[in-house]
Length: 261
Length: 265
Image (cartoon, rainbow over all chains, first blue to last red; front, top):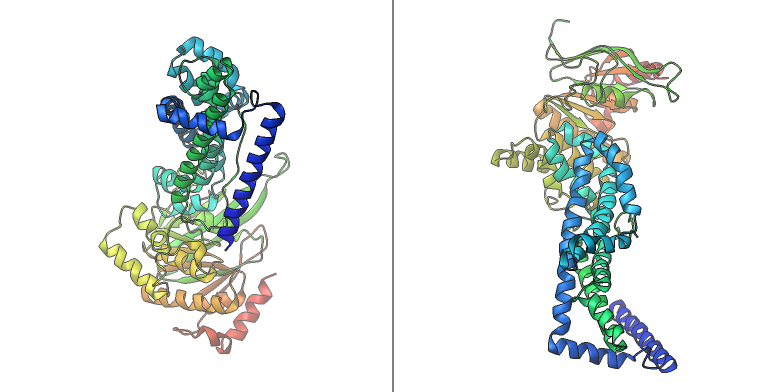
């Protein structure tokens, strides 16, 4: 009953958004704001030729590599620094600075260093994801219940076991909060790097469409980006749900550090 | 003292620096001494704020004493400087905390097996032992439940047998049944005594409940207010096995209760 209700509610909202979009297109002119249907057609066209998949694949590749290259060290570093408080104190201001730095401002630098190929996109995504995941994971590592640590030491657990079997599971909700925030930024970071300078990718497609005054292509590319972000989020949520099966279902995930671009 | 004591605490002291770090440090525990025989059930009663948990933490080697010594089987285990603390003394000292401290992401049975796993001793024998303990406290059938799916009493039982499963010679218990309702509490006390009578571990059990201290212990120690030391020692000669539901009816109960109550301020 409630399930159907929720589907109906969502359908109504989508219908309202589409209607508003159609109205906007009619008011502003289809040249500036293409109507929903031509955008869907443009997307379908690019799907048929496979063009969109080629570009989406490129963008996804840059996002995924950047996500891994930023996410894995960002996740591991708090576990290392936990054992090295002195190093943590030294690194802390640099990490805070890196977090606060607007990474988009680095894009031209990355292009200068790594060229206009995929490397500069990966570098930008890495720099965005790393700090988001690092600070969320660090919060999770700090949030460990000290009584669980005490208990683990008393029963004879070694430091490696404590890290992997006590701190890690307790930090998972925080780490995934970091992943969830990073996912759209990872894809967005790749797209923006492509906008600045690239000959491939969805960002390039947006740029190309705008240059040729083909707004329906711009909208179609943006629609594709949105769908990819939604899909990637679903994957992250699915993995998190699997890892957090032990949780009472009413609880929601831990704190979230957001922003950072 | 004719018998060799398993655990001996002599002149133990703990000092916490004051908040501003300038005025004199505050002694929470000072000149506290007692010894425990092998297989003895000692209860410790003290007013709140008397440093009971701090005392157990020092015995469990999770906190360093500021003065005095703790000896286990005649050998000193603590030298007061805090370096080289060995929490749990190489699994020889078990510790049942005030809260159940179960790992919420592990099922009941995996929580109970956690110490054996951590000590690299998880074998068929260990699993059998865990199953027998689960059965003894009525947790059979709940092996695959997560802690949040269990009642408070069941979580306490799981935490208790998690310590019993690896068979440490000494078990410290810090008001383990404090937060439970009266009915569940008596059931858990009965479970504990039954398990103890089967294995005769050495237990140091902290409580603020005089009746509980009498009902469970061979001997009850009374702590003073801070700076804490021992101000009373009572041998509880109520024969075992004891009927906890009628412990008040035991002829020795009233006089023991009065004597202890007079000392607990």
